[in-house]
Structures are given as C-alpha cells and as structure tokens.
Image 1 (cartoon, each protein chain N blue to C red):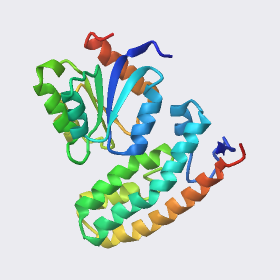
Image 2 (cartoon, rainbow over the protein chains, first blue to last red):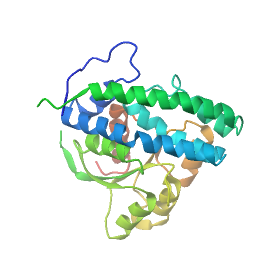
Image 3 (spheres, each protein chain N blue to C red):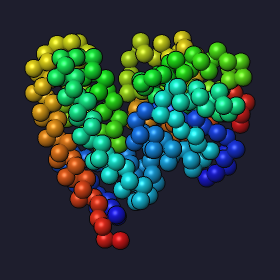
Amino acid sequence: MKIINNSDSNGAITDLAYLRNVSDGNKEFMDEMINLFIDQSDDHLSSVKEGIDENSFEKVARAVHKMKPVLGYVGIDPEKYYLLEIELKAKTEEDMEGIQSLYVKLIDVIKMANDELRTQLSDAG
Amino acid sequence: MSENQQITILIVDDELSIRKLLEFFLKKYFSVVTASNGKEAKNWLDDANYPDIVIADLNMPIMNGLDLTRYIRSERKFNDVPVIILSGSESDEVKLECSEAGTSDFITKPFRPEYLHTIIIEKLKDSGKL
C-alpha cells in the first residue's frame, strides 16, 4: 500500500504530520501505522464502552488515557474531539450519562477518521 | 545516523502502536529492545541483559513504569541506568511520584522525536555512556 496524499486537507479530523515526522516520511511504515490505528480502533472504543457499561469511572479514565497518544499519532486533537472532556468527567467521577453522550460522538469521530485514513492508503504499487 | 548502535535502549510500552513508533524512530540511532510491560522488561533484565537506557510508559498492566523504575534502582548493576518515563499525564503529582521512584526524566506523550533524542543523548552523557 502507498500513501497517495501528503497534504492534510483543511477541516480533516486526522493529520499525518506527526507520523511523517517520526518516520521521516517512510511510506511503508506510515501505511503500517495507519492500518494498525484502523485495526485497533474498535478495541480502544470497546475499552471505554466496557467502563461505561460497568459504571466504572476508573476504567473509563484509564481507557481514554490510553487512547490519547494513539489518536495523537494520526493527528486527532483529543481536546476538540471529546477525549479530554470524557477523561475529565471520569477523573472527577461525575456524569456517566454525559460520558455516554460524548462516547457516542467519539464513535462517529473515529469512524470518520478511519474513513479519512483509508483514503491515504492505496493498493496501487 | 547509526553512530550509537553500540548503545542499547530498552523500550517498554503496552501499547503496540506507541512501541512501534518509538522503535522505528530510535533504531536509526541505537540498538533497540522492546517489552510490552514492566514484568517482561524485568525478565529481560534478569536474563543477564544490560540496557544503557530505559524508556518506559507509566501506566501498564502487570508491572507499571514506576515499579519497573523501583526495581532497576534496587539492583546495584542497573543503578546508573537512566530511566525516562513516558506518560500522557502532565500532572505535577505524577511527575513527583516518578522523581521519587528514581526516574531520570519525564516526557509527555505524544513524544516529540527531536526532543526525545536530545534528552536520551543528554542522559547517556550524564551517566557516562557517551
């Protein structure tokens, strides 16, 4: 697979500048990391959901905390896209309903991010 | 750039993607060994291996970065090995806890590659390994 677009368009959820910097623009490695993000995104979301289902603020906080750097490497802003808000609520142990609402929004963000990232990949060569 | 390939860095992080990022970036400069939690790292250390520097995530299952640091500091043969903790947290409390456990530095995630490299070189020089 090859990355076919090196410019992160305005308004996009993801931004590959960080990954490009760490990898010195190595396309093979960037593809590997993008695929890894997409493959693991359901597991990360499931960890948050598990905490919500168990009404465990601690589990939610831990899961969201783990997600932050992972989202970070594909340039998803944790503050803009609900992660920090969920983490704050979980750490202060308040408003599980609010966390649930933000989690639903987070699912959409991850879905859109994955769609964006897939467009960065190409089987052509 | 491979001038320091005789230097071995032990990377410890339970998150596969972060481990891969660290490994890919650092293997340009150093020899790299990875472990997915503190216990796995401890087992490697106990198996007659010696790292020149350790970079460990703070929050990991089984054995976290703090307990790994405490173990390293408790063993005379590893006592001078710098330990850099990586964490998504920027809390002063967490930083203090790390410092008290004997960590050499604290870097927040996502790590800035150039900054991480600079800190590693600085710690290696401080400990006489460069």
